[in-house]
Image (cartoon, rainbow, N blue to C red; front, side):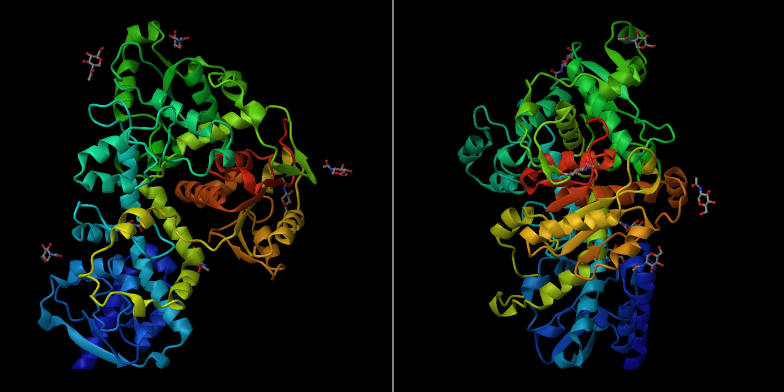
Length: 599
Ligand SMILES: *[C@@H]1O[C@H](CO)[C@@H](O)[C@H](O)[C@H]1NC(C)=O
Ligand SMILES: *[C@@H]1O[C@H](CO)[C@@H](O)[C@H](O)[C@H]1NC(C)=O
Ligand SMILES: *[C@@H]1O[C@H](CO)[C@@H](O)[C@H](O)[C@H]1NC(C)=O
Ligand SMILES: *[C@@H]1O[C@H](CO)[C@@H](O)[C@H](O)[C@H]1NC(C)=O
Ligand SMILES: *[C@@H]1O[C@H](CO)[C@@H](O)[C@H](O)[C@H]1NC(C)=O
Ligand SMILES: *[C@@H]1O[C@H](CO)[C@@H](O)[C@H](O)[C@H]1NC(C)=O
Ligand SMILES: *[C@@H]1O[C@H](CO)[C@@H](O)[C@H](O)[C@H]1NC(C)=O
């Protein structure tokens, strides 16, 4: 009888996993095997915590639709691990629906019977379920006092829904007020204020400090960013978010993203940076329109074919609507209230005038770029370098939930096992409260302060973008060995550096990385270019969704890494450089294997 139920339970786990395509990819085969040898243990994360542990497993559910991993009640369970993060919220959501008679008190296992590797795989596999958005809906059921979902404590994953909610709030003007709620109170700390009964305190703290602006997407101190970054970012935001879009004095520039074949993803970004410059110079609100790379099934609803699939839109919904309404208005065209990309030459877009409304901040840029062994203090077109950095940072200021999930998946594939090891090797149960997960209330410091921390990655992390392929026609190809030489150079100064996030289209580069056993390489699992096929052919073979998502994930990982090595001669690395220099990473320095073509 019990054996039967066990079998059913295994089947459920396996079929559940198989139903989820994203899981299929990430759950290791190993975990499946284990879940059969120790039935249903895949749902148990707590084996390490004691000798005999009793797990309660929801097998034999009549309705499998609500089945999820989890639901365990373990006496010595490490609350800090699962409680109030995904684990317990999941079990809450499910357990309520299951009558207790359907639970099976299952196994008694000795801690020593499981190898450390197996426990790591179990934990890793169960975390995989959290990659799917629907998990966060479970979180919502467990909403805290103020209706906010709880943040995950799986160290390398981000609670995407929560972050989007917080950022949506920050990307709007407050009601009846002219300002967005930007203060030095970061992220969810704003909600702490909202929840506080002390109106006075709230009003006081909401008032921005005079003359100082804190666009919430900028991190790092002012001296760790390009000159005037905070000022410029908030100014761009205000220009792109007029308080009344219907005001007759507001002019618009509506532009599609470049889509000529041959324009790489980086060139598309760079082109839009040029259009943003034009919009600033002509005092127009930039409205981006058709984005071919978001024209795939991953981008649902109104985000289809739109920048908003990947990042928050560049302007408010009201302004977008107003602009599209004016597109059909002949008078608006005659009066020059509306223009499109076709009103400008490619020279205007690609080499147009950099906005001077902030003076000449590029003349104060710190020399932190090294090329061929020397620091570069001055070069041509410093203004363009500064501007592209500001523009791309503005356009990518807040990730969409879709992008956030892509990054979760990438981090999980790359760092998930290590994260599991980390958690398992630092058990905290002795010090946690004894209450079971669902009873334990999250403390304010977890909910409001620590929830704003970035997800864990093995640091320091060096990111490397190695581009060969058909770039060869534009610039001298640099061999992978040269990149590695620079990596060793960084390591000679920072001996704790060991990890490299390798971003490349070339299979050859991945193969070569195997001859550097003293480094740990991470890279996304994607089919790579072999031989001399062109970039366009290669991208077409990946399909639109993959050929956009995987470079974008690498781009954002590069922007977050501690160090970066790239080729300034490629537009892509040039933009990564810009993101880093507006992302608090100026002082990390930048080692480039070559110069920009135009310097
Ligand atoms: C319980 O199950 C019913 C029907 O199967 C469903 O409508 C309901 O939403 C479930 N409740 C929970 C908390 O999952
Ligand atoms: C999550 O699961 C749903 C179906 O349950 C699926 O449509 C969706 O694509 C999944 N999301 C991710 C990010 O894998
Ligand atoms: C916005 O401007 C339009 C036109 O000037 C005006 O009719 C409308 O009342 C204004 N809306 C607000 C909220 O001020
Ligand atoms: C923009 O182009 C349209 C169509 O070619 C033209 O009617 C309009 O006058 C142009 N606007 C400006 C400001 O040049
Ligand atoms: C790099 O520097 C060396 C000596 O400093 C010089 O001989 C060489 O030409 C430089 N290479 C490039 C590509 O600038
Ligand atoms: C990489 O992806 C391919 C298919 O997309 C899959 O067959 C392979 O097992 C994956 N490799 C790893 C290490 O996940
Ligand atoms: C690509 O490689 C193939 C075989 O290696 C060769 O025949 C062909 O000429 C190459 N094409 C280009 C454009 O270099």
